Length: 87
Image (cartoon, rainbow, N blue to C red):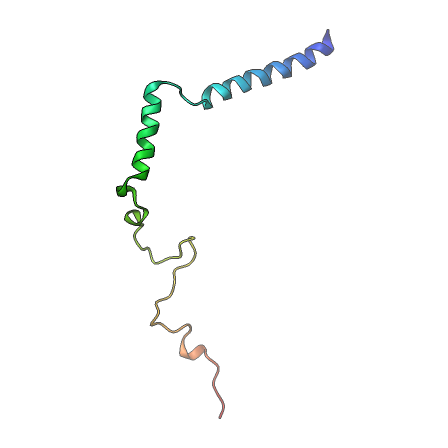
């Protein structure tokens, strides 16, 4: 009976955990949830949901969160850091 307890307890724990996860993550099946889902899809397809209208303001940095870009009219490095040309 002792060996059966070692097998039965983990099986029960896994079954209870699986039941809880299933109950929390299942899709609702009511009529209202279907209407809400349809409304979300229609809102996503509407012309007001155009991604061009939802652009973020320019922060001056890279899109991926990298360092800020230098302005185009600024030299890459100061004149004193450039090697002198002989000639």
